[in-house]
Image 1 (cartoon, rainbow, N blue to C red):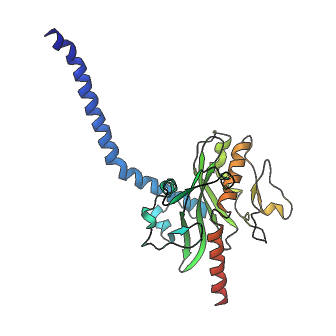
Image 2 (image 1 turned 120 degrees about the vertical axis):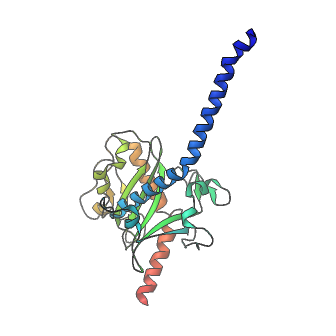
Length: 263
């Protein structure tokens, strides 16, 4: 009896721990669809922020209605048929980790410090009827402490920035964390990614951007007191608008625009 009475509290704690674990696991599984839905809405909100379309008086789904989500192959820049990859079910970050849908980046290639890159990316087309008015692109790259995630909206000329929205990062509050400051993000509007020769002219500089021609069209203010985060933002933008990122896709879109104009 003595042995039984000593062991009983341990069995009670063990059973209680098991029951609590089961309840927590069940809650996590049960709430996952709601969490995924909320995450999807939050990302749509930031896409709308970048495109300058967000209106707090309207629903996210209503505002997102003119935006078409597509999948592109990064190497060729061409759209992927929805029968091959469905945009609504494509998990881009997971794809980068797979040998089938991702690949490792060499040190020379990996300017954004991603280590691996997905072969396919989501893109968001803001349309007015059949005409594409803006293209919103997902970008990411390493800052000082974290991987920073953002959406960049390009105007119909495919080089002028309509807006940008950083939506996830772990940078230092008040310093690198200012990437999410709307006043700093406003400074990106109207800046150009590519120069007249099609080369990347955009840069996030240390300190204040130039005010004279033509540099003022390409430079963005750096983040005060956050040199490494500023450098990280500059590097991720150069990567994603370069040959390994969205440049092939944007080149394809420009060719299509030219064909339509000639037709």
